[in-house]
Image 1 (cartoon, rainbow, N blue to C red):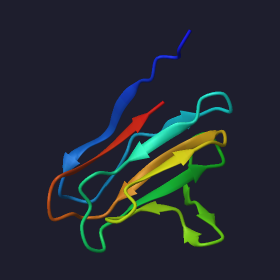
Image 2: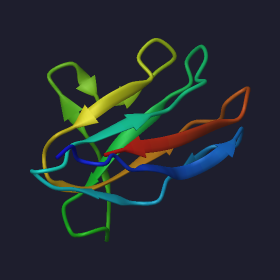
Image 3: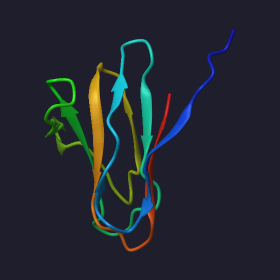
Image 4: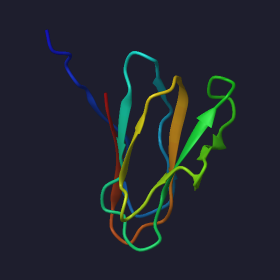
Length: 100
């Protein structure tokens, strides 16, 4: 039986900078994050909480901060944790949507 995918808006479309609702990822259900409509140097930075949502910090990999950009507007989160997206000010309304 196929697993049903859920789609959830964690930050409503807006031009103002904003922070998404926190969302959990577990080992069995990876989450795809989409920040569609970014332009130029606008970003959506992935943050992780090491204390169940009390505080957050930017996530990094070998290439630096993990973030959505105008040329790479989505990514997959596989590892478990509590996450959120911090979106910069944008010229057009941009939302953050997760699928998983």
